[in-house]
Image (cartoon, rainbow, N blue to C red; front, side, top):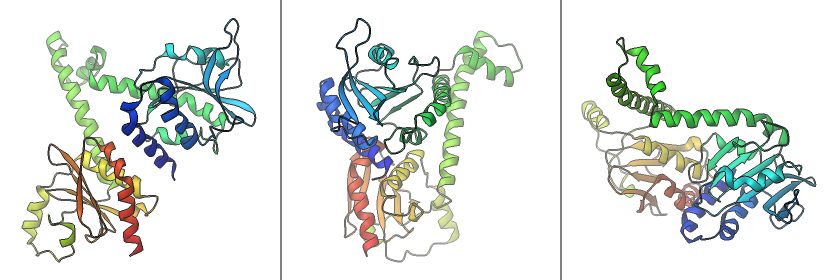
Length: 366
């Protein structure tokens, strides 16, 4: 199983079981231990690799325990403190990590609630854990940029010097991105004034500032949307084409030829959305372990967004029915009969990973 699939599998488990978890201990058993074992690759049942309830007396603090210590080559490398899932993480929850960090050989500490993870090191002062994390992620909303950095923490690739050398850049890039996100969502006066002064020639009065606050927010949202659309369209390499709005079993039939004007008119009615492209990329990520990703193609229609193997109508992998209030994922059985599954978010697609992979493998076997 590829690293991304391991993350996706754990994320699916969190979605399914999160509501049933009521305690910190249940969080550790259900989510944190699988993260250590399946994602990071350390054997949670080997005391030479993972020590639960790790004790290291610090000053007057005797018998205090930290949830997990991860060892490599006999040295403590990572400390993990866990809270109950759903509980917000803040620096007050990391008091034990602060105390233990400078009296062990660990250079990495992790604060988690089973879903959100915060990674700390000692960039600001040697052997003293920083107050701000150098890496953050949420298993239900993982940034693609986080994945390669997280892989550096796995047992097979663990290189503490490489991690520390990259930590500084990660920390500040992450903080800048969060600051940009905050400004795009709710721009402050300085941010608004910066742009207003470059496009407005008059005095920046209170009324002008209020007007440009709305305009700045609108412009940033549109700019980001344009950038995303451009990148996603490029990623699809011009492969978005209309197909007949018929059932998959009928798609093998030759369509009735259309005039050029009719074909162009139909294309103009098709609106490929960012959400459809994101869904397409999720499906590619799911089946790429079984199929060369270059063989997975997309075709948009007025009624659904189709995902095909080899750009072949006879090989439908899935359909995204997103042009309605209730969204559906369409999957196919061996006879190419479509089943529609209602989904509330794009992440729900991962729950159907097994069926999608089986469909792809079925075409390869024929």
